[in-house]
Length: 225
Image 1 (cartoon, rainbow, N blue to C red):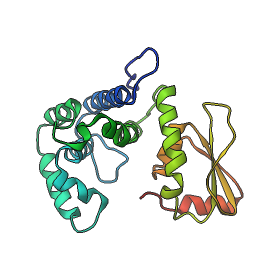
Image 2: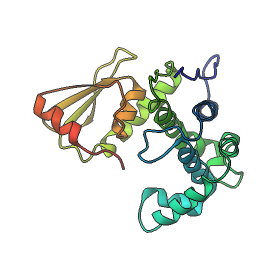
Image 3: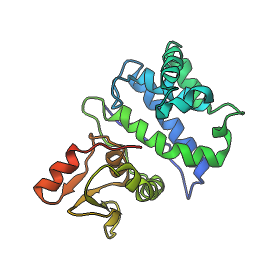
């Protein structure tokens, strides 16, 4: 599958412009693969994923159940109903952005909550396809992703009984200690691949170094909030 080429931009982008670009890229990717394409989200097709994105922004009564708990069944029901809509309509709703009354309509909330969300879900679609090719690197997106993985890594990997260092490959930099502990494993990759790995995705180009037992422990661990 040929990669979607991100929207070109000149100069530094504001967070709101960056998230708008990510939204447009993801919408185009969804249309390219079609509603029945698989994703890295277990049990979800592209149709299910865009339905999730639409209710997340437009149905606060259902979005809270995305974190599990007693409202999870209601969230699943609302999402399944949304997925019955025509696929092109769902994608158009997502592309147009959140309703004006949604918290996501606030530009700072949109950028804080969605830049990483959209980057991860774009790769959930892209990397589930045969012969996927990584998207071209975006330095500005890389900085946002690196900032997020540096701050969220400890929480996302709290169940891993190891020390974990992150080493980015797009810049010459020292490893970042994401989680203290012993023994230590080092994850090496682009900021995007590192984010995907600590969010639990395995279709990444991250290299894991350390002793064999520590690597096995890391590979067997579960990630996420």
